[in-house]
Length: 117
Image 1: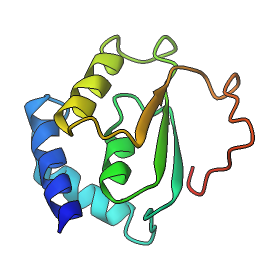
Image 2: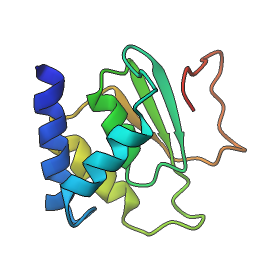
Image 3: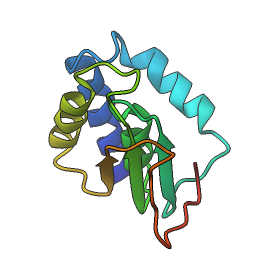
Image 4: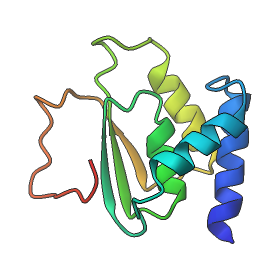
């Protein structure tokens, strides 16, 4: 039940933040895209995650940790970091979703392994 409430908040928030014009089609897309992927208690690396749309979706689905890798300067809009922080704040600082401002080439995960990339 907690996941459902968090997801409902997430889909409301993405419309409020003007990241999507409607939550219905994006909800359908996410459910379809992730239907055979269980993210519960897994670690996720979202490469080129932008404002964190998929990062926060998987974060709401019970992941252990999500790293949203976004270089921002290379090919992204200038407000990506701001939108990420707005989503994080709106989801009551969903702290298992983290933003890493880096390219994949320069990203150093250390000894950390990811279940889903």
